[in-house]
Length: 102
Image (cartoon, rainbow, N blue to C red):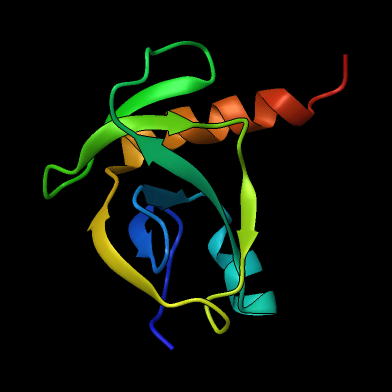
């Protein structure tokens, strides 16, 4: 299995869109799975729809509220790019905002 990390932009076999891995690396190593959010084009930006660009210029809008758990042993996944740390922090802040107490 390929070694995946938080901030990787991946393709998952059977899906047209790309996905951003949002799980912390400790979680990925502990359970050999990770959470992803879809990375789409043609979507308007908003508080939970955040425009990003990878280091190899993969671009799109991360749909933060559509978080999914992926088992890479059950699905064929391939890293295609990586998100810069500053952009990853914006995504992480938006995710945290979904689960904070009122």
